[in-house]
Amino acid sequence: MTEALFGPPSGFLQRLNRAEVRVPDLREAAARLAEDQVAPGLELVVQGGTGRGPMLVLEEAGRRTRVLLAELAVEMTRARVPATPDGVATALAAWLARRPVPDGIAATEGIAVLDWTDSTQTALGWRVVIARDALVVPWRPSGTATLPLVHQTRSAALGRSAGLPGQLQVRGPVALWTSTAPAGVDTAVLARPEELLAEMAAAGLRLRDGHVVVTPRRPVACAEAGVARRLVAEATDAWLSLPWRRLADLGWA
Image 1 (spheres, rainbow, N blue to C red):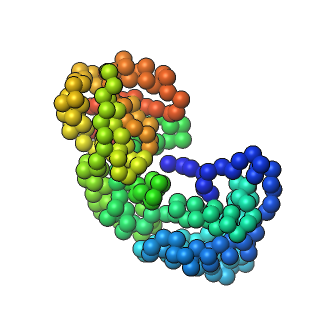
Image 2: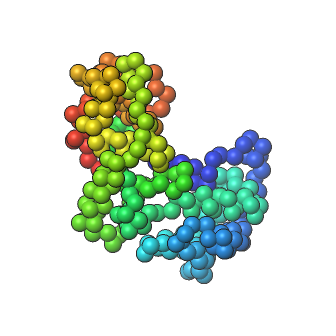
Image 3: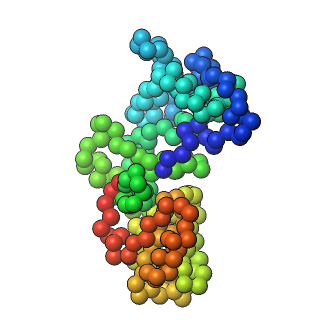
């Protein structure tokens, strides 16, 4: 679930521009976004901080996040963000869209999807996420989240996943499932594998040794084991193929 922190990479000409983003640029951008109320319920405040410099403080649904403006300025400069009012404001808005998810929002809006559990992208597990416009943002419990709250949030997220709409297409020996709302949570359908198998059978595809081919945030492919192996061999992204029976054993990422 990792993406560029400040939006899509800049083009070649912009990469030649080594203009430096400075703390005053971020102060101005933060004030502009706070005035525009970039996200309902989100409060942005710049505080004096410590001897390390001013800090941007985010308050949302009881969760507080602090970051040094100097650190953001350095990261934006490295990312070749244009050092203009619009450029810095756009980059800061992209960073805010990936802000930590409050526990309360995860509990009421979270969806369970499959995500990589390791840096080598060889193992999958369930993760609670929320949709922010075109982004899928993972929930990581705050330091005050209790174990019962974590369990309840995960259980509720699985329940929501089971009810999400989507589209099933059968193309020869392969069934392809795509989520229709919200985008990017296609793997949520695997929270109800038996219902998906029934839909595939009704569409004319019955699997004896069914496998799913999964990559996070992409449509889910279902096929016999041999076909699934060929799909993985031809894939350009990181994919994982596993038998249907393994879905019940997946833990949390």
